[in-house]
Structure formats: structure tokens, C-alpha cells
Amino acid sequence: MTAREWDRCSRGTPVFANCAARMVYPSECTVGTVISRRALLSVLPIPALALAAPRRPFLGITVMPEDYQVEGIEAVLRNLKERAGATAVATSPYVMQPSDPEHGQRQPPIDAGAGGVRLLDRPLWGKRELYTSCSPSFVPNLKLYQGLAYQPGAPDELTRRQGPIVRKFLQAAKRAGLKTYFQIQSVIPPDYIVTSGGPVDLDKPRLPNGSVPKRRVGNTGSLASMDIRRYTQALITDLCRQYPEIDGIRMDWPEYPQYTLDDEFLDFSKPAEAAAKRLGFDFEQMRRDAGALYTKLHGGLTNAEVSSTDFALLPFMSRQPGLQALGRFKATLVEELLQGIREALTAAGGAGKELVPNAFPEPFSFASGMDYRRAAKWSNGISVKLYTMHWPMILRFYGDALMEANPGLNEALVARRLARIFGIMDDESRAHLKDWEYPGPDTPHRAGRDAQARKIAYAQKEAGDTPVYALAHGYGPVKDFEERLGVAWAASDGRVWINRYGYLTDEKLAVVGRRK
Image (tube, rainbow, N blue to C red):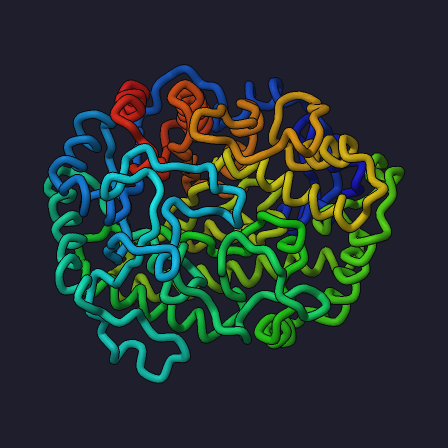
């Protein structure tokens, strides 16, 4: 697909033919026709704006251990069941305590500085923002990790004092009739929580020139690292044996998270080079073509190119063989990661244990490596993130990087082109970059209703019979949350996860209950 065709498709919705890569990179596809969003949503088998209630609704809510450490297990479960009408819950294998800026991490996550405005709706230890530290909720079976490069977090006094609460919560949730899941990180060892841990220097994803990106939202490792994969598989084995109560595992970030322009150009680390050789990819060609576009975007970009739909502004829009191969390569790494996790989960807990990866929506998934069709082969479901507070942040990160590297660019032109490529609004936005920013707690999210629905519909089409869950976010004002939840509910045919309990006031819980 040419850059012009992608820009056209982002204003409508493409119908693709002869697409061997199944939209890993749209550049490898030939376009059929382009129809309007409204027309597409009216005919898709997964109706984006259906009014009829689904026959088998699913409503899961992510509840972090600190939530029931503070509010108590019974109070949290009462809110989930009676107020929200939840059918499932996910938590994580750690416990938390208040700390300080020197020794802890901010809650909620600060998202590379842009999320500093974000506050919790349900206070922790009396505060809507605070610094915390965490410890594993269990005593790891060290025999499972013997000889591995990465090791689990060591249990400590917090583990001994508070750790049992996680098992008690899972057991109480099962008695209440809820399905139970663990959510863990895929490539941030020790994988317990997004704000803690990370890879050694060798396993950090790298740009074509071999450097590590200066700004990243998550400290994820290379998907190609065999050391990280082996650790994650051992952790899953450990968790299945220690917590037989869980029905499955939700894997967060089993891809290359896409938040900044640099994220588009990963991964050229040593583990990735070894994987490319093993898998038959031309690593030097991928590096050469990615490096050429990276250099172009960092000092050689003109207004004429930004405004031209014939110019491939991002790697997934390019027809360069190395960039097309890079998309297939990342998709292969994601599939291998999920296959290994599925095999470990089955070996430790049986085939009935569910694997549900979280995933970026299109078009971010084209650069993250998340090919929904290939992921579906190893998954019981796929949760597609509608984290709409991140969408303006992502656009701003990309735009600021382009403007800083190319001072002569027209700011409004850059903002319009990126908004069109990302497909996050329902109209032709003419805002400047300064108007795209992380929303505060009382600010509605800048995300089109049709845009959100279209992303879920596309994922379901690619995933086939594997169910796609809309992963909605609770952050934001009540009315805006209610509207976004309605879109998620309809677009997914009543299969929704909500992240997370800490952003759900009692009023929002009541909103969820009415939708359910």
C-alpha cells in the first residue's frame, strides 16, 4: 500500500485483498475499496454501534492488590458484583506499601512525564497520587529459575506481612462467582508490575544505529531475548502452581509498545540480530532501510513531504523491502513469545488455563508486531486497548520529535497528518500540536466514537473466531467514561475489560452496572 492509500484509508476504512502479511504492515497489501466508517460499521459482523444486548456479556475489571489492601477484600468484591455487575477480575502477584520519591515509583504511572496530571479516583492510603514500593506476594520456587539470567524478586517482610492477601482475594472472588486472572508484564522482568523492573543493558531494544531510545514509556526488553522469554515462562509455571485459583493469565505489553517515534524503529539489539539470523531475515537490510528513514525524519523532512500522501511518514507505510521485513520480523517475535507462554501455561496449569494478551490497536499494532491473526492462534482472547488518554500524548510525542529535528516544519501540518494516520478522531482535526496533550482528570478524552469502534472491529475481523475484548480505561470524567464504555461495549458485542478499579468512583461503578 502506498502512503497515499493509507491516508485515504485512515479517513474511511480499507477493504484489503491479497494481503499475505495480514496487515502486519499495510505496505504489503493491495487495496480494494474504501468505504465510509458509517457504512462499514453498519455491515460488519461485529456491530460497532449495535443496540441489542449481547447474549453472553463479559465484564472484567482489573483490581490491583493495593486496592484491596486499602479498602478490604469484601468491600472491593461488593463493589465489583453489586455496583458494577462484573463477571471477572484480574489482579497481580505483588503487594504494595507507601514509599518516597527516592525509593519508590509514582502511582499512578507518570507515562514518561506526560501523565503527571493523572490522579487516582480511589485514594490509596489517603492520597490520589503517591510513591510506593512493592514486593512479590509469594515465595518463588527458586528451582524453576535455576541457571536463568533473570531471577524473581526476593520475598521480604512486606511479602510475609501482606502477601497472603492476594490468595485470599482470588479465593473470595471465586466464591463470589467471578473468573479470576493474573495480569503480568511480558518483558519487564521480574514482570509483576509495570512501574518496577526491566532488562539488563544487553536486552534493551535498540534503534538502527545501536543506541537505546532516550525516552520510553515502559522499560520493556527485547522480544527476541531468550533470557527474558525463559524467565517469563518460569514465572508462569510458578504462578500456576502457587495460585491454582486463577483461570488464566493476561499478558501486558507482549509487543513493542508504541508511544514515541523512536518506538517505530525498534529492534536492532544483539538478541534481535541473533533472532533475525535464526529466522532467515536480512538484518542488515532491515537496519539499512530503517536507518535511512530515521535519518530522513530527523533533519531532512520538508513541509511538502509531510503534506504529500505519496510520502511514507512512518515505517509501516513504506514499500522499502527492509521496512516491510521489519514488520514481519516483529510479528514473528510476538508470535514466538506468545507460543512459548501458551506452552508454559498449558504444561503447568492445563489446557483450560486461558491466555489473553493485551494489545495496541491499529495502526500502532502494525509497528508493535501485534498481528491479531497470528496472536489468535495461541490466545483464548485478545484485549485491544482503548487507552484514549494516551492517544493525544502519542501524537504529541511524535509531533514534538519531528518538530525538534526539523524546525522549519509547519506545526499544524504535522498535527493534521499524524491525526489522520493514527485515525483517532472522527473529523479532520486542524488543531496545533500544543492542543494535543494528556487530559487531566476532568478533561474529556480526544477520541472519536467511530475511531474507537473501528479499531475493535478491525481487530475482531483479523482475529477470526478468537474473541476480542475492548479494554476500556476508567480514567477521566464520568460522562466521558460513560460514552467511551458504551462504545467499547457495543463495538465488542459485550466483551469488555476495564482498567482499572483505582479510577472507578462509586458513580462510575454505577455507570458500569447500568451498562451491564
